[in-house]
Length: 523
Image 1 (tube, rainbow, N blue to C red):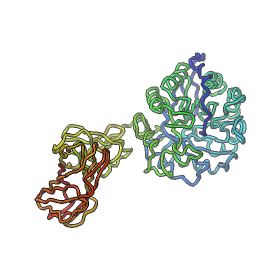
Image 2 (spheres, rainbow, N blue to C red):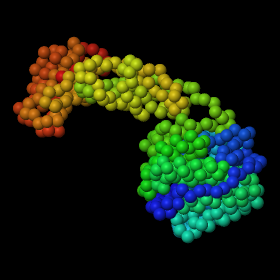
Image 3 (spheres, one colour):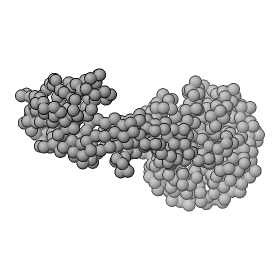
Image 4 (cartoon, rainbow, N blue to C red):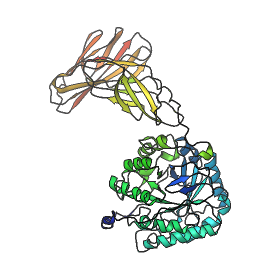
């Protein structure tokens, strides 16, 4: 992956040209192999890649990433290697990478990044040079055909006059690899920085496939800004299915400098068609595309927006990934429920809403969200352990609980219930919001913010507590106390609130109970 040039719209006008190819027949192969549009394992079980890329060549010490990637449900990791454009990854290092993949039950797609942008990017290697590298590390991957896919070169041509040479160069690279004794499933990237906007790979894939004497090559397209509509995504995938040729989405993102990829369609169509996908990338991005990091600082517990979408969203990795049969997977369903969420704590109660927070659940794969109920009525859903309820009725008592869910649809036991009462509809378009800012044994400090949609010259807020609460002190207001009802009116200097403005007052409370101090009813 790199920052792509802007999409050349004129060339996309050829989008609907037909792809004239014949369906290839399956050939005997060792380990992972293709049959028609599918990737199969040695025993014949279909395997659909679901995973991400890890920039090992730039972050060789981040080996814990393999376990982190697996922990979020991936069945595949695409590992960035270099043969010399960056610090070279020698045979010993590659062998360790394969070992890490196997330890974490991941299919290992090894890719040589040196070829990125050849013909347009200074310093990029040719595919022939990439083959030299693979031959130099052959000892590390020979015999690993059940576990390793050989991705010859990343995005091997840019956007210039060299691009038409992709077909010949790719065919020649495959032929050299087979002649050197490589028996692996080979993956080949598209030109145009992987996005194939000129359709060179799409229209010449059959010829490249035929150049492989083992007929064991899978094609890889990278989907960024070029694939920003459902029509473009669907058409490209359909062309390969119609041709009977195997395809994976070897990289994609949720955003990019060259446009806004349609990741929802990419993932939905890949799932519907049994096409593999690999998001870019785990962590460590730079050059202005740091937003493509899926986790922060290689920490699997710190998912970014993109990471949350890729791993835990609809048609995401947690929901759709199946571990390779070679590791004992192959479709065993996930039946383990998430743990029970913590009891919701309520704050920021208004006439129409309240904020709930709770201790997060855990799961053997991943918790994908929470639903909050009042009895059997679902009030809302959240991807995190908090939810701001809206649309509630004024002066109404609610008893709520939270339930966690995972990608397989397993539901946790319901949390303990929390009760609260919404406030009355405030006059003059004003609303009061309460929060407890501190508490200690036998006492607490409260704060109320009065916000008005229209300008007012005076305001009043009433807090009703359970018996046993007293308010000995307040500030920024005038207090009239008749326990358990406490009425606060504006001070002489803060009664005027402009439209859209607010005023805040505070107070100290004492009470005779134990545990968390009670929340008042505001009117």
